[in-house]
Image 1 (tube, helix red, strand yellow):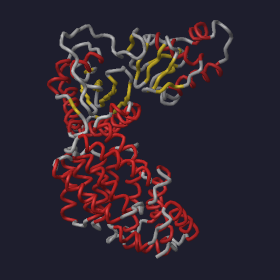
Image 2 (tube, helix red, strand yellow):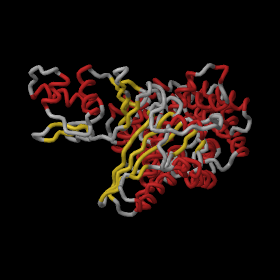
Image 3 (cartoon, helix red, strand yellow):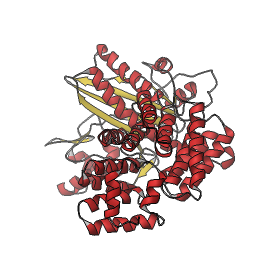
Image 4 (cartoon, helix red, strand yellow):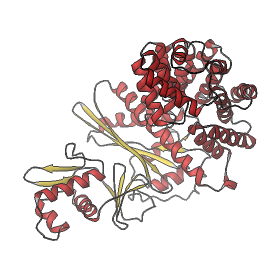
Length: 521
């Protein structure tokens, strides 16, 4: 038997607790406790019931029972204070109050057993990029008139996801053919030709609304992501916008991370252009000399297979640009020319893709320097996809380079809210730190620089941010330490060569701070 709740699965045959695709270490007694509470979720379980079932009638102290209950809560992300899943009812007992779905199918098959429909049509082939269908959310309000609210949430999420050209999203009308039916997720994926399915529920009561969602791999049945959003019900449309942004900003990066992990496990001879792109992205995030070189190689392999893959051309251009900016280039003039060439190639193929526009605006901002054009491009990217971390992060850098640090900070803050666990978050933090320096907000620059450093200690930019900010505050020892770290990861660094790399014409205070920190001219 398998029990599913939130993003957990309790497999009684394997005696495993899984969170998403990961196995959560669980002691046998804690596992048995969870199993018993979940199987008896329709009633309050007394202390005597637990002692009889788990401890076989042995004498158990209240302290020992409390310890086991807290351990059970801990492995499923609950706590004694929150009691989100396991509730203590004083002088009565305990009850598992989370929503549970169960199946007696083996682990690794579909996660929703209720479906009884069969299809005579052959399974559709999966697209060569992440594919998803958003099923109608279940209305748990007990009020048929609230159906419009649940349906509205699904439409908003579907539209928002469809703005990511890196995703294949099934249209709303096809997904809604499953409305009101008990569905088998694996069959949904087979009929719609998608790898992932998002399902959820909406419950409205009084002036509150709770929306839950979970992302499932329709091939394996594994839970990829789950979350719950609870808000005061004020303006319905504003609430839909807010929850849509929160859900999409979590789902899209999770999909790409999952796809990237799968791409690295595939046999090399089976790679497609999109697989090469995913692998290139993984190397790009590392932000080292070797990582950028490998990302460029993989991106060019993708372009060989698909010369009209504009996004991968833009990625290759960004990597050549970073070679110049970070001092990795053996031939800076070559990398600069390649970055601009690939920028033009990308825009020539697809000039209405928000990700392509973002990277093109960044390459132009650092390698060309045409503020009006760059702001126009990145603002268009944000307008095309206001839920994109990449677009808001790029906008921050473009506005920072244009000498508009206030707007840069707002853009970086929006990017971080959009994707708080994004693998490229160190770029946002260091860009924010640079903007803070130009605003004389040196303490905040240090906080941002340290966050960037912790996320990627081999990335040179945080050390420049820290050296300058510490120097401006007269914290000379810390400024010298940051400068030494910078020279360790970028031994050839000089202030003049850094300025010549591009994009620093409006970084007056940043440059002044680097001089105060004693970095070589």
